[in-house]
Length: 341
Image (cartoon, rainbow, N blue to C red; front, side, top):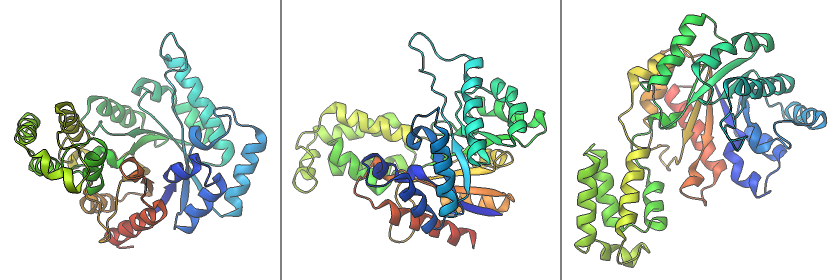
């Protein structure tokens, strides 16, 4: 059965500026249709990674009060804790065990970690996941994709272990293809690249033209006066800097680098109980331009996936004025429409 969770991270901007308390975030997630919630511990847990007993009781009380099911505890492996070196394998295990103990204490069913935990370390964590009754999953996030070698190693561990207490949290950022309209506007507004140059480059990118050719054409437009058209209506400077254009093209091809690896996603879903439904902007028609949600959600449904798709709003990356509550509402509505729920 496919259920829908909401990560409290989606309310991160208002939590950071103290417009929302953690109770506000939980209450709003529940009101917006969440079957469960995700907590990013390092963002919203005071004293992380050593919360007090009082705070843990407080959090559990909030979940009970708002009938919010704690589904996913998002942990972080802080490789920079020491100034002289990265954490070693034993230290990564120690940090993860601490997070798992807290997650179990708070009633979470799944702990999401990061690929800083190697496949070998993940395999060593299996007895502890079994001890705490948790599903320990590594997030596959952009720029990684299923064909990235380390993910083949993770799946080898999962096949070899024969247990479902470890797995993968695929993040939709690994499958983003096309720049959104909000990304376009952000580049014009913040990177100071003229609108006609941006539009031509995005169109060429979406035809999967080589990065070098697109960059050459964009620089030629700027040098040929293409910047002048943007100066009047879009606020970009009349003369764009070559560095700004190069930065834009590099960024676009980094963010939206490949056609979606659908075959690889099918394999990843065999080891998934939780999916990060990353998105940046749902338009008035209920469409997310960057990620092929229609195709992906139908694949998830056809796979027999039994778990949660987590709504994860990151639209403030490109437009701080977006209403996260309306965007979250649209995202869940879009998913249910595509899934036929």
